[in-house]
Length: 444
Figure (cartoon, rainbow, N blue to C red):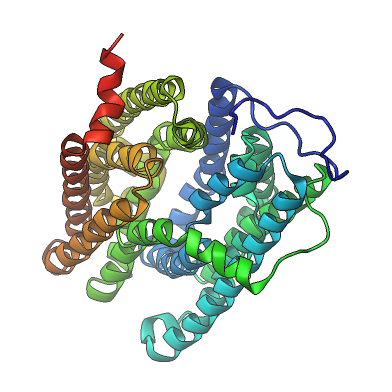
């Protein structure tokens, strides 16, 4: 397996060859930063408008509904965002195998989407708070449907980050004006949910069109055995991504259940601001993951040193960019919440500070787990650690939220992220192959 660009020669079976995979890491990183900036530029353009038009309580209701949709997205995504690119790396020079991979993954996602919708109907029957916003909750599942057909995992595996960024931004920017036009009062929560759900659905349709134009998508070809194989391959990463939802979405659900929608609004508004300051560190992981995984898979000293070098550079870049973003947003927390959110969100400043501190631990922990444990076939160990951290977060949130509200949820998040990083560091230092992955750079 080679990480260089595949040749454009015709495949032996006569099918259209797979287009060139990837380019330089620098160009990939720039593309993903542009994507991330645009990805949050659209919400930022409508974010202050929604917080003011809806008010803290109804904005909290919007966040509560979106948090429920996160569970459907996590189940449907399953872990294909990580297992998918890995599988693409293995077969990207074989059009027939790649076509089968695409259709089996889409089919697996469709099955999981149906399962998530069945669970949603059960929740709506028993959850009184969710039932009060039935229309909004059902509309939020547009996001889940969009996830089924979005082929971002394929473009990442091919290292076609520029295409991925262009498709994602197009879907978001097209829906941008609709929020201003149709959301006019606090009663328009369902309308806001529908517009937000339309963006990923449109992105999915655009990604299908682009992949067809690249000549990668042919007549559907899959089987139940292949679908089950895809689900098995993504199981370990599903546990990890599901654990992440125990931090973000679950905290909003707990706040809504124990403290009311106002506290959800305070927390979710601060969390949205924190995410903006965390744009660049998040893309370091996305760009490096396919390249590091491919180098480690080669199992030769030269590739191993190259993978280690990329990992160290990425870790340093993650720490530096996270620290700079956290310092900026903590220093401006009071001004940002007043200017961007409005005077009724003053409580978000303290929450934003806690969440920014949490990113210092969380970003490095996520980087080490993805760039060290996963390439070395320790995905299940990573998943167990993240699951334990998610459970710790939930337990702390239940203990702290009744007294401290949104600040209690943010404190629970911070403590859990710090615990995960501590465990990863201990495990890496105590495991010889992983420790040697870094120490080999000291040997000439």
